[in-house]
Length: 102
Image (tube, rainbow, N blue to C red; front, top):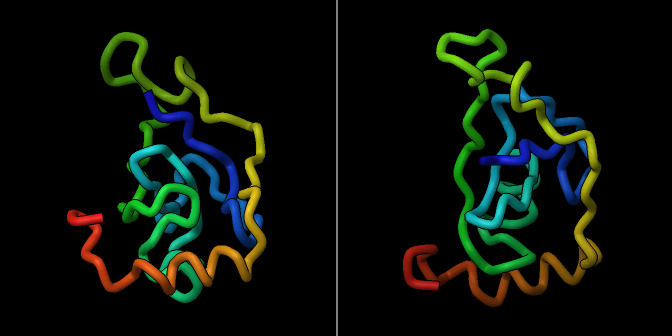
């Protein structure tokens, strides 16, 4: 189950559970769409994978035990261990490789 992390690992923008601009890689590294597009160029600086928009977990319970009420979003803020410069350099190295071939 997704953690639904609360912030962009680069700019620290708040990304609440209903954020339409939260992007994740297959390891759930979480960045805002602006950072993914303008700095990271669709390259996860932590793993090298690509990004997709994070799904939004329903607030209301439509099926038993399935909603934010039953599986709340994480409140633990995560920050990448890499500097913005290190991220940019890494992303520049592999951005030309399609994400499905990385």
